[in-house]
Length: 129
Image 1 (tube, helix red, strand yellow):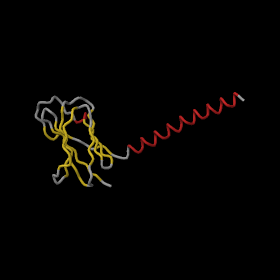
Image 2 (image 1 turned 90 degrees about the vertical axis):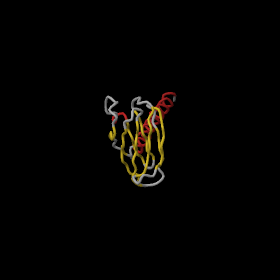
Image 3 (image 1 turned 90 degrees about the horizontal axis):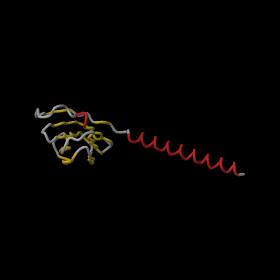
Image 4 (image 1 turned 135 degrees about the vertical axis):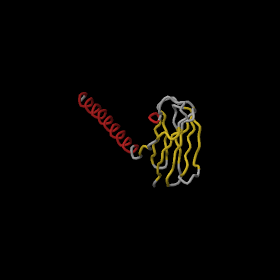
């Protein structure tokens, strides 16, 4: 009787771990529905030693733009505007922290990241339903 009880408890333990893993895989797949926004250096002051576009990762998922910084770039200004020029959001943040911007309307947008040394990085993206 004791061995049967022990086997049933062990089976429950293994199955709960398998279900947790399956749930995590599903959530990870849902998070990958968006896509990365390509970004490039559009204006350089010459004061920086190298291109920092590899340290900036903008990612659009539905109506949410996430901008992540993988290294300390100091204080940066991040602006999001429509292609027509209407401003959606303009924020100043310290890196390596990131930020999220909710974009309520569909359309084409530009994200502009200005570093403290004056270098400007831009990327274009679209928000669709």
